[in-house]
Image 1 (cartoon, rainbow, N blue to C red):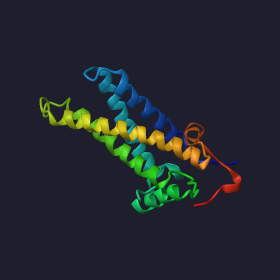
Image 2 (cartoon, rainbow, N blue to C red; image 1 turned 45 degrees about the vertical axis):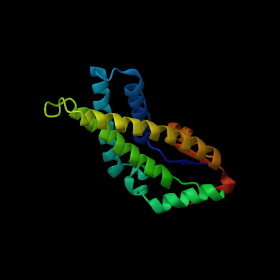
Image 3 (cartoon, one colour; image 1 turned 30 degrees about the vertical axis):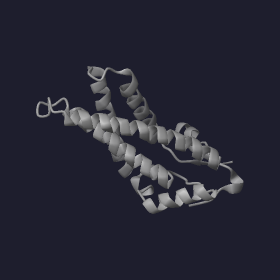
Amino acid sequence: MHRTYVWDPVVRLFHWSLAAGFAANALLTDPEGNLHEYVGYAIAALIGIRVIWGLIGSRHARFSSFPPDAGAAAGQLSDIATGRMRRHPGHSPLGALMIYNLLLTISGIALTGYLMTTTRFWGFEWPEELHEALVSWAEISIVLHVAAVLFESRRTKVNLARAMVTGYKEVPEARRERH
């Protein structure tokens, strides 16, 4: 196995804190309660930190290392369909699209949640309806994200979930490709 350090502590702490916060608000807190609101503010702060870290952070944390690229994502789908094994040092092209999707969706959830607490939007239905639609989209996206991580971990023989815990990707030496 070739072991490469990929995910710094800020990325890993962000990832698991966001997952815990989203799960708490989706499953455990009362949507009308103060705790739900406070967790939402914490999630918004996490997104803010991640955006800053995406500009100034370590190599694989920077947005410039995984730009959204539909062509590259189509290439990854082609690789999957044809059985081609291409391992990516950081986010894969499809993974990058999912990261942007989740960052934008969860930012929208935080914004609409905040709007519902303001006097200006109090009583309007659209912020709550949009908030609920975005939560549903995030839940679908998270299920797809987890399924893709499991699928790609099995397909590429790289334990992606472990890498997000330890910071290291372990790639089989004989089949490793550089990109």
